[in-house]
Length: 337
Ligand code: SD4
Image (tube, rainbow, N blue to C red; front, side):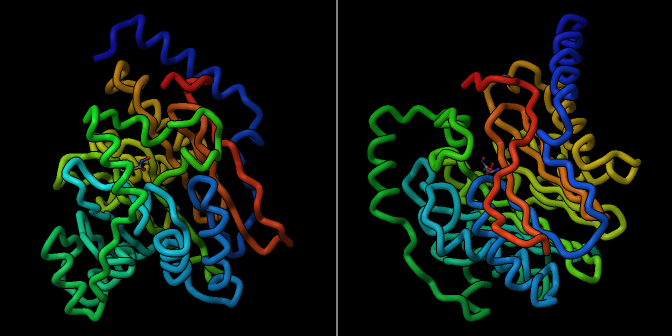
């Protein structure tokens, strides 16, 4: 339980955040039509890939897979796909999930040497009786499905790991906010993507290399349905980025969707879920980043984070360019990392 002082402090922080103008949160009142939103600055590129599908009348499911694949391959960053940083033992393991608005879902965790984990997650959903495959079993399934084994660890990631080994100090938060400048290429992270197609169907995907230098075998929130991703056509969808242990503890993406089901806007639902994280672990929440992004079935969008720096991107039929990042609100107004 929070003591009284903690409760008052957290309430004040949240009240302060709520006072920001709604535009600061990127709340969107558009009444429908296809739309895609993605986490972080590279969300712009993921959205563009997804929009090729949505703009041509394709499904939300195909769109989020296309967006996630773009992040896994075309982009070289240290937190998603083939350029991801490895775990404590120098092994690059990837997590991904995909879900549609009818509750169909699939995921892979700690998969190695497969370029497109999100597509393996989709294969788990469509071609197996299961929802989640892990490690060697996930790779075996991928190979059986025709995916190729590709050694993924880049020289840059290997060098970063060699450098890290000099101290071997594990601090999950630095993976999120290494730089204090929002959108700086150092601080983007897991791709979470949510889309609504022209038929009003929703889908989402999440893909990541997880926290750098994690214990071998560690699985984050991204492949855990309900933690890193949750979608329900009757309500909306939510995805998360940040230190996944907090999302798993709070079944966070499911929580955001259930709050929207109770009538909250996407922004309010994300803010309430962040409040839950703070309430549960007030001290820890000062040291880790947790970010939520949500879209409801009307296409309204909101995002909120523990710490400053979380940005997301949105694309719809509005004439471009679609390269503006939306700065999500946060509980802590300054980065304390
Ligand atoms: C994880 N949520 O594996 C992912 C990583 C991430 O910001 O999003 N970091 O915990």
